[in-house]
Length: 336
Image (cartoon, rainbow, N blue to C red; front, side, top):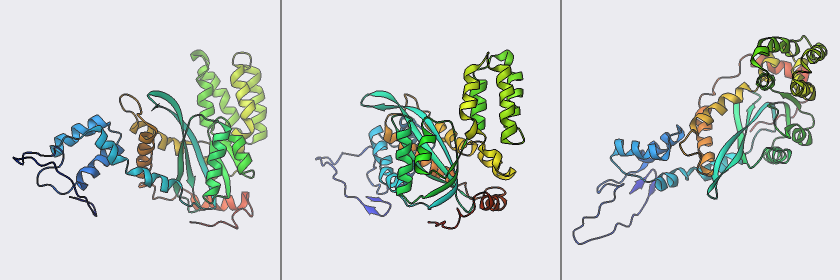
């Protein structure tokens, strides 16, 4: 039997009447590649093993098991490891970082896992995923492992990291990339703040909050935060505390020109990728293994990257701004 460029010898049981017939490979069939490619395509779209089985049966008139589907998609695992260890550029102007949580089956029970994702903007203004990591918890030590791994793969410098207010991430960035500017996602801060505000206050609260992130500069933003705290501090002390605690990293963008501000004050670029991963991992019964999550994440990222052919809007202008804001940091850029 042939599969792509490989010849595979199958041992077929013999009986007196030659009546044995494999339920998956027909008596005179010799090619599996079309069926396996279909399985990969269905799996990448987020289809469950059960639905893949039904679809394959309807299209190819063949019965396949969950175990067979798993063995086919497991062929991705060496490719994933190779992709996650490939050399990367020594410098990126911008990294977007986010984390998601999933319930994944491990040793017979479902446990909470963190999926970390890092999306880069390279010096040509193109998007590129540098990797994903599945960890037990979200912590400074785990982020330290992630950034140290990127350094091992060749990364030496990052100008700006745009991220959500993830546990331990600032400490880890400062430990590995001390020169990097950190911009925490303003949209996430707004969303998290409003989620704790009563309905009757929401409209007024949101309007007042705008005065902070829409100020003309960081100094004005702090003055407006003080006024905001004076008005709302007694009703919503935890929200005010969060704004003060994260103020510096929430307002880093004020020191950049307009075009650069627009692409780093929020992590929307990576959130669109996260939505695709969540869509493709919505399977009945939960995620059955870490390998399953790895495979579906990898295929989702590969499919998404096919569409990332266009340079970031206004990139020529943004790159010139970066050269001015970060003098001498572009001198030793080496691209892979």
